[in-house]
Image (spheres, helix red, strand yellow):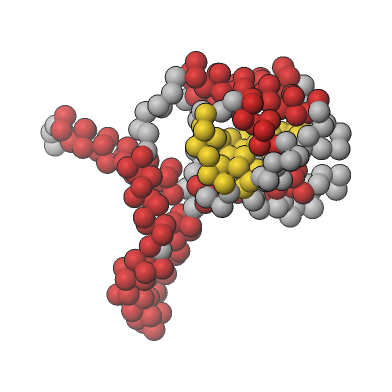
Length: 251
């Protein structure tokens, strides 16, 4: 069968749209909703295959109401998802130079906070959308800068106890609350700020920087991997590896 170039373009565009939609809903309630629908669909297939007529009838009855239930129960999530689709960046909106500048500002702020023994929790978004967490904080949408981060985490700031969430070269929100790590593997020496940062990495692919208020030490966390007592060069290399090198290599 002859394959036209239009067919290849059609498949590519559909795959691109599906990929972007999955990135938008990844880590949100909408993703869990889709997982639940997948379970129902699997149960429907198995019930028909095994001849479980009662289960088949129940699942089919649920399917008849599922569209209405989605609209009513998940109206906020649908609205947010559509808004993200409209705002989604199919190509990066900032250059490597801008990204490098943002990383340098984050590094300088982290070192300055560590030297002054001011506690801080900085979260940098990767692929998993962190809107569910940022929307619970104070909305900023400001350009990343050393001065901004220092002012947010100053002890006199009303949002200094929460987390800062960064997307690209923008600070989305401050004073955000994160899920605490419950794993027994987490060191007992870690306080609430560290457990909150590590807890987020258990659920998402975000990169987290924690500055200890007691010791002034810098800790990073990514996918449950923790590195403690980082200096300026190590922190810069860590962020560069995740946001410059991995981007250039397509990882």
